[in-house]
Each structure stands twice: as C-alpha cells, then as structure tokens.
Length: 140
Image (cartoon, rainbow, N blue to C red):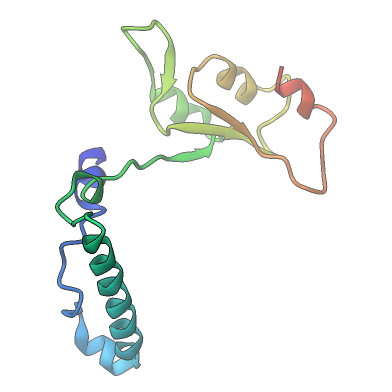
C-alpha cells in the first residue's frame, strides 16, 4: 500500500480536460464546476512549468503519506507491534503515530501502558474546554 501511495497517489500527468464519468457530471450540473477547476489546475501547472518545475520532476511524482489513529482496540494494536531488529525498540505498525484520548488516557489503564512500551510518536488528545487533571502526568 505504501508503494501505491508514494508512486501513484500524487500522479498529475492526467489530461485535466477529459473528465471521467462525464455523463454524470453533465446530468448533475457539475461539469461547469469541474471544467473551471480543471482550468485552474492547468494554469497552476503552467506557472510551475514556467518556473522550471515540470510534472516529470521527482518531487511532483511522489509524496510522503502519514497515518494516525487513537490506540483504542488493544488486541489489534498488539498484533501489529513489531520489534525492530536494528534498534531493539518496539513499534506499532498499524500507524505512524498513535494517540490517546478521552477513552484511553487513564494513567493506570492498559492503553497508556501499551503506549509507554512503543517507540512510535505519541499524541494526546485534549479538548479545548477540558484539561483533565491527569493530562500533565501523561507528558512526563
């Protein structure tokens, strides 16, 4: 999947004036909006080409794609945790970054303990209007 995302997700060598499903666009009245957007994309690509950045440049054909989710279902997370043989550290391979939130940030809970044992970047969801008393302890 990573190869698919990096190689094809950002592919822009598509003829912008050949809409897919043109019949549906005309029938729903979206063709005018699509044509306007396609024209703006074409203008932007023209500007970039004039500045020396063509669609064949490597920066225009690949992208970095990161995933994140709440560490909610522990059996799922545990089954995707692997030991890195080069560093000796454990990583949860279900996402690049995991986070704990309202349901999973109890200091004495299993979710916090699991997150403590992995080396992925970890986030803490804190609502703007509520700063729980235990949140500062999670950052230590």
